[in-house]
Image 1 (spheres, helix red, strand yellow):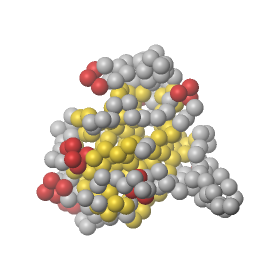
Image 2: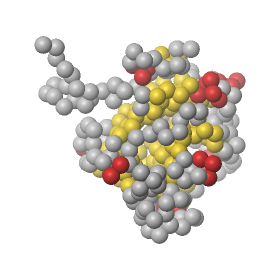
Image 3: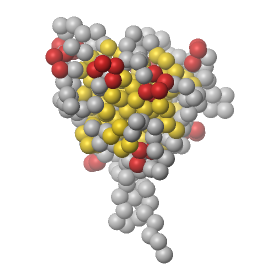
Image 4: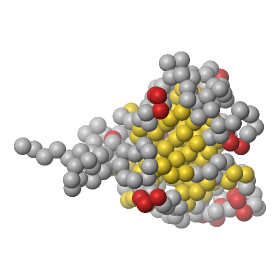
Length: 292
C-alpha cells in the first residue's frame, strides 16, 4: 500500500511543506513563474519568537500591538496575529489599521524576481451572508529601496472591500506609483475565511520584478489559493508606489528589503468591532525562475 504523506505533517515523521500549495511547484504551472528561488526568509514563530517581525510605526505613530497566537494553527506552535481596534469607530483613529514588517536583508542588485507568500486566516464579527465584513483590507507586500536611495518601491497587493464605494463588493487591488489602486481583473470575491470565526486559511503569493520597466520594477504575478493572476499581462507598465524620498531618517534605508502584512478595519460595517488576521509561514524567495 502506498504511503500517504499529509501536507500538514500530521503523521509521524512527516513535515509540513509551506510551499505545497504554491502553483509553481505543481502540475498546474503558473503563467510567469517556473519555480521559486532561494529562500531569503522563512518564519515559523516556533517557541513564541517574533523572529524579527515588528510593529509598524508610521511616522512614529503606533498602529497597534503585534501579537502571537497558538490558536488557530495549521502547523507548529505559534503564528503571527494582527488586530484592529475594537472601540467605537472613528475615521481618523490610528487603531483602524494594523501592519507588521520584517527587515530581511540588504537588497542585492542581481535579484530580479522576488516572491513573498504566506497563509492568511481571517476572523471577526460580521454577517457574511449579507457580505458585511469587519475588515476593509487584507494586505501583503514588499517594501524595497534601491542602492543610493534613488528609488523606493512599495509593491503591495490587497483584498479590498468597497470596490467602487459599494460595501460587500470585494476584489484584489495593486498599489500604483501615484498612490492610487487598480483592481486585478477576475479577482472579485476570490478569498477564503471569516465564517463564524472558524479561521479558514488562504494561501497568497505576490511576485515582483525589479528589472521590469527599465529597472523601475513591476508586478509579475498574484496567486490566491488555486487561482493565478498574470499581473505582467494585465499591468505590464504599472509601477509600484514610489514613496516620497526626503532627508528624514525614516525614508533612508538604501538597499532595504522588507516583508509586509496588514489589515484595516471596515469603514462601512462599523458596528462589527472585532477584526483579526493571523499569518503563518511567511516566506520570501529571491532569484525566482521565470517561465515566460
